[in-house]
Every structure is written in structure tokens, then in C-alpha cells.
Length: 333
Ligand code: AQP
Image 1 (cartoon, rainbow, N blue to C red):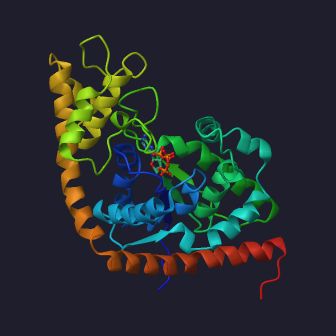
Image 2 (tube, rainbow, N blue to C red; image 1 turned 120 degrees about the vertical axis):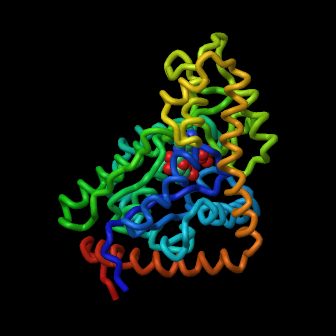
């Protein structure tokens, strides 16, 4: 049956063990859209190889990321959950969109600049054109909304520029996607360097809290989180980045506003505050971890979900691909 609801699309790279940044900025919000939107949520394994991966780990994390999607509340019967490399239309569309994306535009992407500094020995063309593949992911499904964390905003703006350019030359080809960036939690910062984004590929384990970390590790990491020499628990990202990040995390996990959280810890010390942040994080993550372990144990089920998702996604992707091929002048057999 054709589903005519507007489309929500997003993805996560299986490039490391996912963090509470990935959770609060993206995955936790995905199920919200499942009723109102036709939802596609992808494990973007082809994006992950822009940085060297250990093959066995990439394969394992692909299953794990899918299991986490489901554990976080994404029902495979209500959402199309699939793996990017199972739908070849993504790379085919990316090639075509490459020819409508300017070198200068890609050179301005801050993630490219950051990652080329971090991986100076491997500044490959894929790292450079990554945002075009991301645009292809989104545009293939005629997407209306893209729930993402703050760091992906610039890439989404590029996707929108590509739509503008393409639709001017070939009218009515792509739907213009709108970002949905959560008001709170869209940029969770590192616990060790609170002016830097928390990233799953960070080598400093004390900087990141992972969705699957054991409760004692979560408590320990929050206990060690960098704060400041002051003692006031106040939201002020400029002057108190560490404390503000912890307040954000507390507020996102507890459902309380930042103001309510500030009031709750008024007059309390950093030690009590950090323990409370760790506790609320454990309370929310433990049920997710239990569900995740149950789902991950059933590999055959996960492969069934992957297969069904790839078939569904391919059906929609092929329609857009064929339209674009026709518009560009390729012969469709
Ligand atoms: N720190 C963060 N705070 C809020 N949202 C975040 N996201 C990532 N980090 C944070 C959001 O998570 C979704 C999936 O991200 P991704 O897998 O596409 O890669 P990324 O944005 O590059 O995330 P990482 O964790 O930093 O991965 P690595 O270390 O591999 O580069 C996106 O919606 C993202 O915005």
C-alpha cells in the first residue's frame, strides 16, 4: 500500500559505540515521528568508511546500531529501518549529485576541516564528498524533515542548496528537506573538554558516555567530568561550559527544564550534582540496554529487519532515481 504521509529521514554511522550525544541529539527523538511521518532510519555504513574501520568491528556495529534503534523504541513494523549499503541507489544518486555540488561548497564544511585535521594521513575523496552522499540519502526519499544534532546542520543546508540548484534546472524533482534540531540536547559536549562536541570516535574514554556503558562506568565518568573552580550550578555555556553541559544532560534525561534543574541543585555541591546526573542517565539507559541485549541476541531477526527495510527503502529510492535519470537524459531501459 502506498504511504502518502510526509517523510522523516535520519541516520547514524556505525563508526563507534554510540554516545549519549547520539542518543539525546538524534535517536531518542526518532520514535516521536513514527505516527505522523513515513519514517526511514538508516545505519549509514558507507559514511563510516570515510575513516578507516576494522572490517569485523564495522560489521558488528552495524548489527548493534540496528538493535539500538529498536531498543530505543523504533518499531520495524512502523518504520523503515535499513542499512545504507543494502540500497545501491544511495551511491548512484550521490554520483549524480556530485555533479551539482561545488568544490568551494564542500571545502567550507567544518566537519571536513575537523576530520582532515584528525586524520591527516587519510584525507580521502570520500571524506570530502561525504555531505553529497548524505544529501543523496535524504533526497532519494523525497524527505520533508530530518531530525539531527546540531553538528549536521551545515550538511543539511548544503543538501537544501543542492535541491535549489537542481530544481531550478529540472523543476519539481526533489522535496526541500527541513532540519529538526531539538531545542535541548542537540549538542552534547565532551565531559573532558566541554567546549568540544562529544563524539563516538573520541579516544579519551572519560570524555564520552556511551549508551551501552555499565552503570558504574557511567557514574565514574560523570564524577570525573570537568567543571570549573567556582561552585555555583548555573547554566552559562560561555563561562561555565562543563556545568552547563551537565545541566543539559540532566534536563534531557529527567524531562525537567534547565531552570527547574538549576533550582533543584541550588546550594548543592558539584559532587552531589554529578552523582545525580549519573543516576538519571543510568535510570534511563538501563532499560534500553536490557532491551538491546535481548534484541542483539537474535541475529536472524535483525537480518530479517535489514532485508525487509532494504526492500521497502529500495522501492521508494528507485522511484526518485528513475525520475532523476530521466531528467538528466540517461536512457532508462
Ligand atoms: N554530541 C552530540 N550531541 C548531539 N547530537 C549529536 N550527534 C552526534 N554527536 C552529537 C547526532 O547524532 C546523529 C548521528 O551522528 P553520526 O553517526 O552521523 O555522526 P556524527 O555526527 O559525526 O557523530 P559522532 O558521534 O561525532 O561520530 P564520529 O565520531 O564518527 O564522527 C546525528 O544526527 C548527529 O547530529
